[in-house]
Length: 616
Image (cartoon, rainbow, N blue to C red; front, side):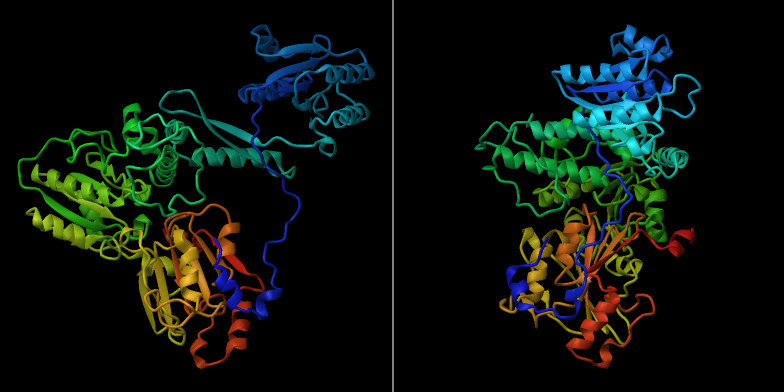
């Protein structure tokens, strides 16, 4: 995302223009790729267990495999795979010179591409038949001549690529191999430690992760292929390519009956992206075929009916018996994300009182996992363009369940009264004869910034703060506050519209209904805080001028996120700066910002502080 043309022309930065706009590359890494090898050939020279390992990896990547071997030195696995038609065997010569002639002749005679060549008979552990360095070098030259990448075991100077320490996950539901793989490399600095790190990663991930990827794959293919009927008035065959966005929360218009098949497919792909971000691995892994159909049918809310069925499959796959007493409804704030930030009242509502939990999709899995297994859990299906419809459906589901005698917890992120639509739900429940019990939560507007080292107020820097939203009702724009040096502005739900937000803050030609006050200087500090309080929290620190470019260059966004604008953003960095309100002009402010960013245009901060993590 980038700032508008008006902003670029009006602002005239001085002190920070000498900063390096992008990080300097540091050599020594590898370009990690995942190859599709279908309809290509992998050539392996050697017949040891390592050659069998390379062959198996190539076969799993849908490559045809040709193994060149000497004499009778063929390991049992390669012989078995050849006997069962999985690979082809070709003999080498009696001398290394003959081997090179055979390989040259083979490459010249090929009618299909060779993906790469693996030379495995150069292992230092081979007591007999080890290929010499001289011969390996000549094979390397032959491969270069034919433009075929080559890997020579134990001779990194002759390798065009290296293999990562890999693991392919199992689908825990079907027991078959999952599409999910991971690979770890130390770039030649520690093969053993790479394997250890790989094992630790696998052990740390839940066993359902393989099945979750398989389920998302099925959902994604159906969303792209348009296997569901589109709204009346749509055109095309519904098979146009759908692209997954860098952030699944980009603004989309409300659904329309005139929406084309392309629009339907893109909207469904956005929904698949959001499910991938927010749902727990166990929830994804447990999706049945009929649920996949229901997810993409785009009916409102939890299902095609206006009421919730108590026999509907819950997060914990348990059914409930309907109590005979009058039900009640709790409206509960879950805090910014980390389960330890739940209030005691919120924890008790989830663990002691609830029969049914209706959860917003942003609630982290770590919070949902605290809910006992006998409690039914449903996650809001607020797919793109359907937020209002899904909101209505959730409210109706809560009332229906309460009428059947259940205690319903309507679980919302942060504090439900801070842009959580709590008022709408309170009035609706009241109109249906239920007075909801509202349990406030720790607001992300207050907790999120300090987890990134940013206070919303600070003596000598920020005497007040404003919390606002980046999007109004129905996706409309909102009026943002103007610049006041002593004030912090926290903008929730605004990152997807960052370009518009930045233009609103900086464009001097905007009408009063767009911004309430003067423009912001280009060098005003800003922080983008994503996944606040969670282990994968990320904070991006920059200026209003450069933050758009920063987000474009740091990789995929991590919703949910917030924007913090004002001088409090820099006041606690390192030794601190609490003299912002003591005076100074533009030059002093630019120098203050330059020192804060250490001569760069932006800075990123990954994860939580060690002090916070070690507290538990």
